[in-house]
Length: 235
Ligand code: SF4
Image (cartoon, rainbow, N blue to C red):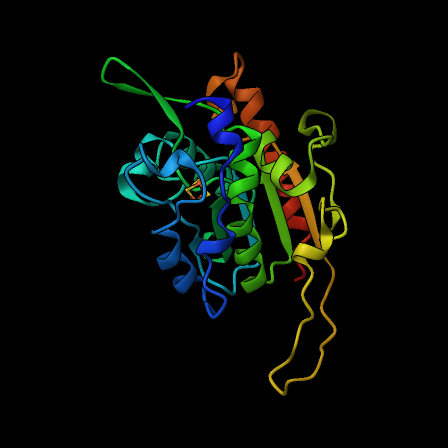
């Protein structure tokens, strides 16, 4: 696929039904997304997973080989490591919603192996409407950005995870376009409710731990950052 072709990606917005009220409805619609060319070679769309009442939303880069085959995010080696880190940080897995900035697997074939390729900006931009739609149905206390691609999708291209990781920031005020993620909370009586301030924290992607020369140190750093996220949850 040439850069010229990818630059014309129509984006996901036209595939999002305006009447989709729930994450399940969004997931069903995302199965037919043709917002960029990545759907052609991937097996299936890998949408977010978790309850709409999740208190923590973790955003990664894109599905990997195993996620692409199973249709679920974070079920491969990096996902297993993330689950262990989440546990060690004291986060309750039942309170998590897991998703990715890009919802199809981008890879190149080498022989019979499918080798991960980092999504380009055009893919992140094309897929961002799904992320915005997910956040419109979620109301987390904490958003955790895992790695540079997710950081670009949510915080803009100038954000550097290596420099700014582990620090709690206001959400959605810290987003690149905060208005995309700000919704007016309404209580069960239909009145505008006071929403507790949510926060965002960036850290490395669990796959970076698997690639690190010193995996123990990288893992400890990931757990330390996730522990900061856990501490931000209202008790
Ligand atoms: S990567 Fe995102 S925008 Fe591209 S086809 Fe898949 S769901 Fe649609």
